[in-house]
Length: 297
Image (cartoon, rainbow, N blue to C red; front, side, top):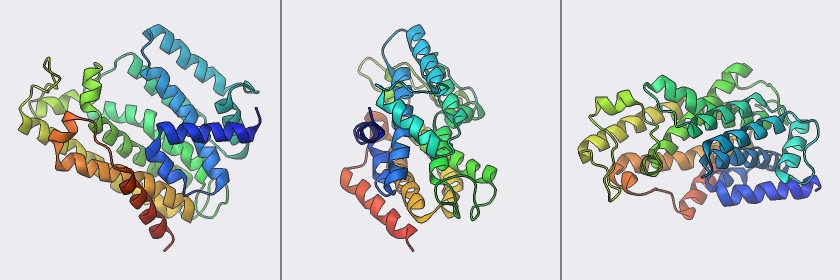
C-alpha cells in the first residue's frame, strides 16, 4: 500500500472513531493533518485492544505486539496504519516513548487497575492522554519552526511538553466524567477512592443500571472533579501561545469541544450520570470556527 492510501485510511478512522478530534484536524495544513491522523489511528488501535471483549491474556499479548511494531525498521506493507505512522516518523520528531506510555496505561485498563489517590489517577491520565498531547506537539512544532522540533516563542521544550501533557490530562478527566456510568457497567472505576470517600459515594449501581448513591452527593463529586479538570485546562491552554496559527486553532478546537462538554457535565451531573453526553455536530463546528477565528487574530 502506498503512503497516500495509507494516510487516507487513517483519516477515515479519525472521522469514524475520533469525531471530536476530527473537527480540530480539519484546521491543519494537509501534511500535519495526515501525520496526526496516523498518530491517532495507531492510538485508537491501542485503545480498541484494551477495550475489547477478549480474554485479558490475549489483549495483553496484542498490546505487546503493538509495542513491538513501534520498533520495526520496516512496517507491514499491508497494514495502512503502520505504513502511515512509519512515514510520519520519518518526517516529524515524534517521541515514540509516548506510545509506550499509552500502551502501559491501556494495560492498566486490561488489568482493572483502580486509583486510591488523585496522583495515581494523574499518572494514568498522563499515560493515556498526556502522551497524545506530546505526540501531537511533535507534529505541530512550536512557534518559529515549520514542521516540528524545538522552537522559540513558547519557552523551553520541556516546558512546552508539560503544557501539552496538561491539556491531555484535562481531556482525559473530562472523558472519565462523561463515561462514569458506562465504565461502571463495564466494571471499571477511575475516580480516586479518596474522593469517593470524601463525598460519601460508592458508585454502586442497582439492577436497573441506576446509581444508588444520593443524587446530591454524586452531583457534588462530579462538580469537584469538573473543577479539577478546569484547572488543568487553564494550565494546558497556555500551550496555544507556543504554536503556529493553524496548530493553535486545531488545539483550541479540540480543547474547546471538551471544555463545552465539561461545562454540560458540571451544569447537570444527573444527566451525565444517566447517559453518555455529547455535543451536537453544529456546536462542534461552531467551536472549531471560533478557534480558527481566534487563532488568526
